[in-house]
Length: 190
Image 1 (tube, helix red, strand yellow):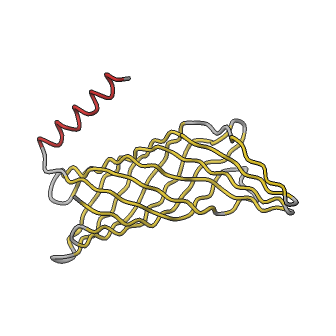
Image 2 (image 1 turned 90 degrees about the horizontal axis):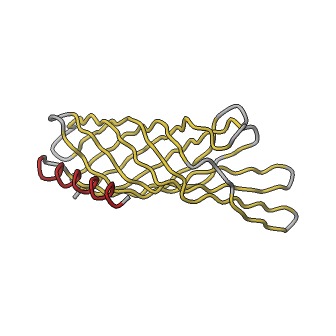
């Protein structure tokens, strides 16, 4: 594990030294839900994300933007007095290709899309029924992967964006429920 971490750090330093990369940080808020065959009765759940990343320019318009994010996802159920929610925290790595359009001297528009890979580091459910509250571990599948798409408006070093994530992996065995989330983000380029 230490060797792998060392190799990743060495690769990041090599990339930093050989290119005009920029670093960025962002925070986002939005809602999550699920899609699949077994999603009847599920509703939106408020979520957030926090991340850091780099932008590696390939040419004047195209760049590669890998990030490391902590993203909350989940869902709520409100059915016949049963109020429950599922919170899942993923450590995820989106690797998106970005196309930048220079609107004027101050503003850029960036369209981005690509895969993401996530690992659930927290999962908790909460059920409220007749004034009683129960919490516990949800035992979701740890690995998630899917598609990430978004649009950013850059004003100098400020970045305002919208991102949509659609998971392709079922969250539980024998149930067709996959992650889906939408975030509005604000960030800063270093």
